[in-house]
Length: 498
Image (cartoon, rainbow, N blue to C red; front, side):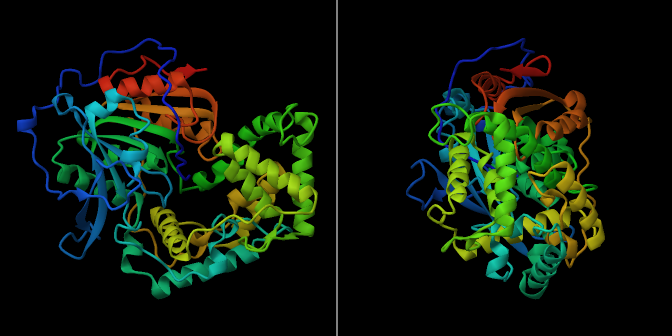
């Protein structure tokens, strides 16, 4: 569920379908003199790579909203003010993906992609959600080996056994219980939504517009449920299943469907004549080639000094495939290069890992958010049964999406029930979704669309990759979203962009 951001030129063309009257068209933005001043103290951001106009601030919020008089924590916030104050409508909050992502650089990075009409209409606001550095951070003293991607996502043993995954869950949970800050118990989607409303108030805004991506769509939907009278225009991009942590742990299970949705596109690309990374003569040959290679690496890994882990095994290959499907332009060649090297018994240069402190912060935020939102099964037998079924039905992902992660041994119970997305409230939501998205597949997005009912309209791109607006989508979809943000106009009905 992470958010992928890349530099891309804004394409201003596209097919514009039937439009409704602007949402909130009669509610013109108040004149500058009538707006509350807000309470944030803005200073120049320290990062020299940002737009020089970007400003930074911090906001104190309650760690425990059920006891607002107790300890406070810090939330880091950023902004680039509207480029035309005379036409400014309000603030557009950039809600990051993850859990574990932040949007502090978003006003600069996403701001470069947004059309002038949107930059004129809003102050662009980024933030680091609670627990994410440089907001008050959380961390657990995880073993270095438990920070590998193939541990954070629970790939089972080559035999299909989940015993090692259960041991990892207990070890990581024990580390959080032993040395983790009390804040770990208060990192959750609902508290992220409450923090957002504190940001809104500190900005001096009566209502807040938002662009949420990936996990940010669940946070955005939660904010919309919890503070329905505080929203203006909401864009949900690359949409989570509305129940991502309960039942079948749908957010993790989504990878089974997402990989299957994407693999035919990869296979067609990887068999194309003239492709310097060509793997096979026909698309039909690519899937069995991949499965054979992964099985061979399960049996006989290739040493990979400097990598994490220091071998290329079947699960590393599978994880590389999954990561590569987020962004086909860069990811497909990376996956193919690793396949070609492995077939020869070699490896490419080892990828450089982030510092351990960054990985520990990220892993702790992921664990706390997912485990605090809802309880997970504790029995190894539950996961073993799921993995066995998943390996048969979805061999490309080898049972990982049904396996045990740290939540199987999390030391704390959820403090409140998770968000339930409903169709109650004003109709102010636009969903934008790619048909082939590895992390947030169309099937889950349709569930969110169904839950929102008449509150939302959905634009579906005939496109591949994660991140539908100004990223891996279509010119048509970009145009519709930009128009909605700038003017309030939405398609009259659910729309396809091809």
